[in-house]
Length: 248
Length: 62
Image 1 (cartoon, chains in turn yellow, brown):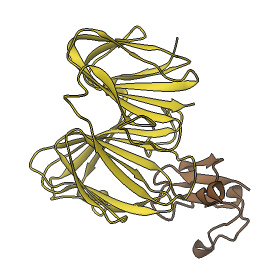
Image 2 (tube, one colour):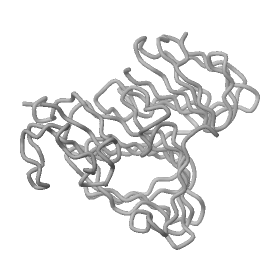
Image 3 (spheres, one colour):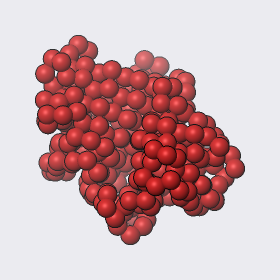
Image 4 (tube, chains in turn orange, yellow):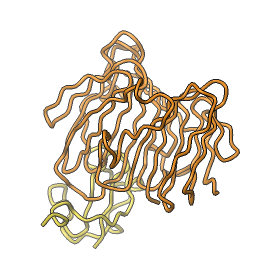
């Protein structure tokens, strides 16, 4: 058993992006609009901290205030960008021609490939909470694509559900990479079985779990390597977790 | 000849291809691009690029 790192909620990178000032063209919204971003890895900070895990370079826990706050149209290439909506509603517009609205438990996989732009907005009346994951692709300049799916809360209760990866009902991205969700209100132990050479990043959206002798509470995370079995002991408050598996 | 990926937006630079539309000739080594050069798409500094060894989709599928 090998823990690569434990990252507490408060140790993550923090960006405060108001819609006025230097970000005015990048961040949409009325003058009080703001995006806050807690970054597990070095998003736009490149010099220190944790550079990512395997092909995952970004794990961003973001909040957009209501009333039109978000990212204006901006370009991407290559990265496979995923958004998991944790609360509120995300309006997504992209140059593949898609205008989409994603609500709690919806998620998308946008492969920017040869080039695309997108805009991410909260046009609702409550805060938008969304987790962004960026993955380095297996091939450069692939045709861009956009797909969406939904985590089924009833079917997914008290089990580990694969959202992204080569499993039935999930969105595959053509390489050794998975995102799963564990939503559990029961005081019991779940087992995740990664392929032995892969790394696992476990992020607690909510609740309280024990993994590899570490207790994770809200927005804590850890990374493991060299495991073929990860035991997740759900403690009294239950948990809502994202589990990322990546080749290292 | 190597390729580099912008960690800010995913823009890729290929030494073999250069960026003629941005004044960088084909064959220009990464080391020969000025340190104050930034990503033409998103403004991320040169230091925010990672070297990658990833084939092009067109190569992988042909």
